[in-house]
Image (cartoon, rainbow, N blue to C red; front, side):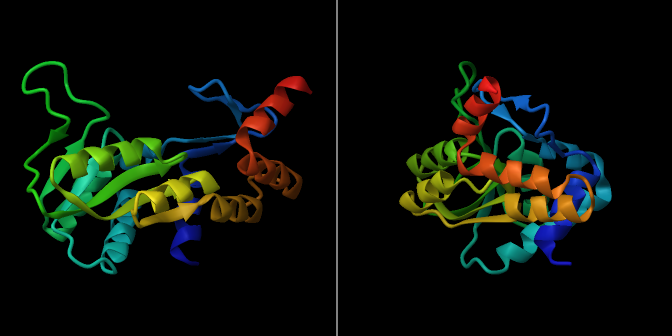
Length: 213
């Protein structure tokens, strides 16, 4: 089994990802969604978090000139710190905004201007939070070697946003592999998988259609 399918299996196995097309979740935006992902759950499983950091390490082997690792707060911090430790590299983390007290830092740790950082996120949906962190990193004088995440919903708009920002994005697993594994494991039916595919194409339209049915 390839890494993407293995990570997808692990996400389902420990309930980090839940699929509920008939009783969808409500996101903070108010949209209804048949999927919910919380990769922080993986931290409670030593074997699985080890698999994640090993998979990140393998991806990092294909990126030249990594000087440090930057975790995106909050969920990217622990996975980024584990990877930095594995690679023997400096680690920093980037808040969503500067603190309102103390030194009012947005970036914690010692960022060195001109150095290339590997940005670690847990989940890519629209990519907005990751790209805001990358903007903060660049404004502070750092540059981006690449951005890695555990899982992506594979929204086309997200990939376009990373391309426009000139950031190479790689994820350990994605929505396609998750649905393949969910069907293979009888976690969902083929019919449910089709519904879930429709959601990925247009989450807002799917949410509105659910509310109006």
